[in-house]
Length: 496
Image 1 (cartoon, rainbow, N blue to C red):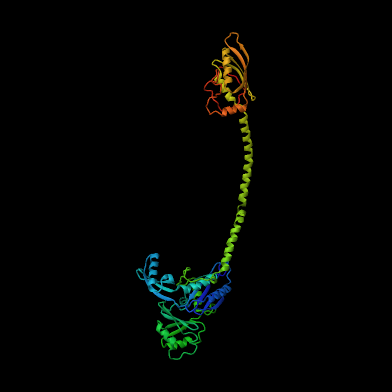
Image 2: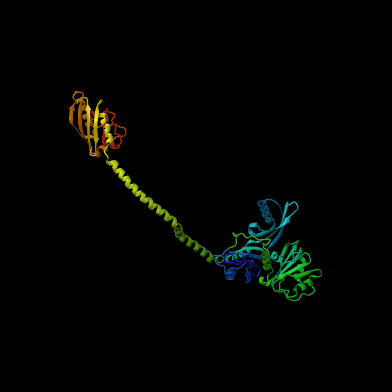
């Protein structure tokens, strides 16, 4: 038996009778009258009243899990069949069982609340013996809806099987009689298995007077449906000495015994039997399963609107608080990321400043290599260079020796025709004493750096530098290319 706690509520034991509903939880018990329609089902007013009474009795909190409710139902409307089926895989056996139930009962399995209990098989285990109990689904579905609306998860079994646990273990073939206020339930057992159960309309009100020697209607009903000569009697408010008087009415050879139920069980043998089974750590032998998607009509009274409203409200609140909880949980991680971003941003500032400096330096430097390339392509063979200097103001000064004055004129013409220079001046031209060479000092002024860079950028890589004067005498020879700007050369002395 489960212990009582807020997280694990104690089990609830329920006995469903024809006129009342008995509920026991630990030492508390409640008994509620039932009002039925002509077809035997509960009236809507009775359902609503029963739900309200049960909720007040159980006092189950909406946040608690559902309590386990074991319900014992009477024999009214219940059919018992003993079936023998071929053994097989669980799937095959279940299909055969459904087909057998459809053939044995007047309603298809989908319209029944039913359960089975394994009894055993033959020696070769090719046959499986089962006890099947079935009742119209809508009858049990009413109680299922009521108990579910009160915060319970109900399971159903037969009350006679619960009372069977109170009988002596040595009892084999016998009859049980449950006496109610205006009717009684008579069940016979063969080899410990219930074979039939019926309702006889003789109750406490009919048996209150002493029974004389002549058998009455109850005794006749017992003899017509009993097996063996042993009878166990149970029920509420049975008159004193009733088992002895009934033994006398049945005749010689009969033995009637009374099943005593504990006071904590509300004087109910069925509930006492359920508690005894739970105390032994077991479950009822035969559970009647109810499909929640039954055809039973459910009204708003059977729905626990407060419970569902609380759940929906809790879900909405959780969804609203989720972003804030996420922010609190991820705050340390986000703080680390922000610190890393700030550190990287500081490094990027330094990198951007250095990149801007290099970009400005590249854009402002004169095209030294292009100038040297033009000189190398324009100078005639056999020229001897003594000095060459270039500065950042675009001034170029060189001293060299040519073979004659014509080579000096041609060299100057080619420099002017290249388009790179704004002015080419021969400042000094002195022949050597042997008249074999002419020493020349030339000063060249480059065009502005922006014009030179635009001229270089306008030509594809590897293309020779040309201008509109390239066809004139002394133009820059074919093959002078516009190379990329390089490292500036301040002073260079070359001899060829």
